[in-house]
Length: 460
Image 1: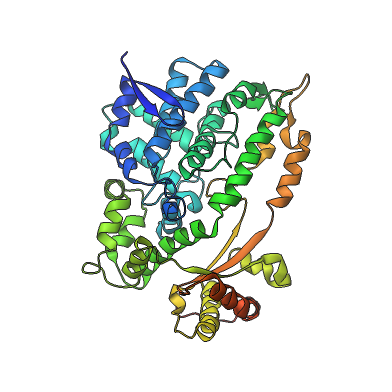
Image 2: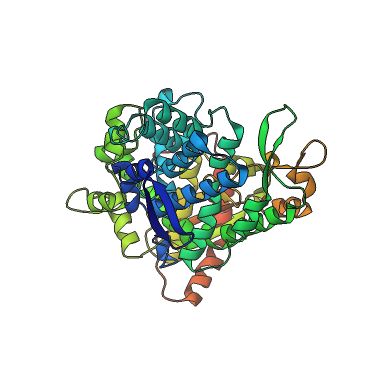
């Protein structure tokens, strides 16, 4: 069986066999060359232009190394490798940004009960592409495609194979931490990959099923991995500029669909589990998206205006941020605000910002966003309680062995509410003055909106 070696900046040479090369050269995989891993994070970190394509290669390489460590070979290894290679083919333009409109516009009756739910529609899309996209038929048998899709959905019967693809220590997380750190030019997400792999083993859990675990003397290795995740989340994924660019993209899409009436944009995200949707969806990437929807002559309106601002780096500014805990009894309503509550907050905030800034601010362009350190990177809010530590007797949960994990969970537990608006200022002094002037009015606006959320009607 022939091999192709591809040089990767993180892992060196990645080796693929003939079938895997066919998958790599297929249209669904090649499309990932044009979908950026961190959306428009290059507005903050200029080197962050890496794509889902090279990330998928990295996940394939790491999954292969984990299989070797655990003694998994033959057909089972090839299945895991191919699931790793194809795990991101369901991403839309700008990666995780597309998950929000997918969840918003998908037909919920088309989601299978064994999928992860509407908030993870992109994984249902991934499984559908693997099972049914015609470009994959020449490389994989129907049974192989069904098994790989089962690994993506989490319905595959082997728990160890599932853990390599999706778990707190999966190959995806191991690659994106190292790759995002390298491409952003930071050291926050760096950990000892080889040592982490040496720590992996398998055990029988309390139900007698095989499970992925770590050796008893390797708790500190996983703690280093968690520390890397914690720091890169705080410094990269939760950086205000990264949050602003992501939320401007999301708002551009929603306004394009619901205010500008761009049917083509709605169709892009209206998942209905049909072959027509799959074929149409896999034609889109970051570049086609911008060429089509940032062109004022084609689709003038809110969407084009916001996309143009993003491309020219006229970014919204953060006007306010505060812990939800500071809002007392109304904080629960703010964790996941309804459209009407969010709209009311944005209306009141626009009035306050317009008054303080001396210019009209359109409430549709004010963005209210709530987030926590655990969930700021989609797919990252896993439960470490599922990680087991091998002992002489029954395995024990990692969380019972790690004081560090329990302390870091406290630091990650805060949830924040923030407001972004299209305000211009010329220097840091002016910015600080405006933020000070808006602190009390914006807190009051959020409090008022939350207190009256059940009665308020919103025209948006």
